[in-house]
Image (cartoon, helix red, strand yellow):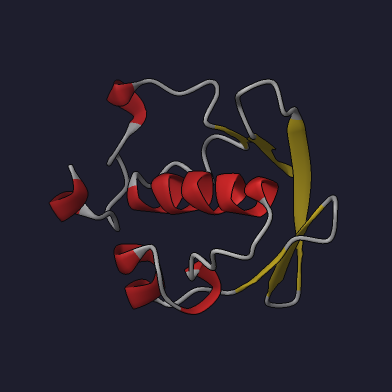
Length: 100
């Protein structure tokens, strides 16, 4: 197992996260429970709900998680959004073709 690293961009640094049970926890205490398909597709439901009161760091993590899941690159690229190119997107049998 390997940490998932999310570059918050804008000079805010990179946070590492790790799954334990059904929860993904990042440095700084940002947590996300295991999402359902509708959570990923809508990017604003369940653990992916965009709450105005959330910190900018949590919102940045959320945006990159949603993009990574929709592009099917979360397992192949543990550093998000770095190290990927458009050619890497949508390569797995289970992917969100509608988000292309």
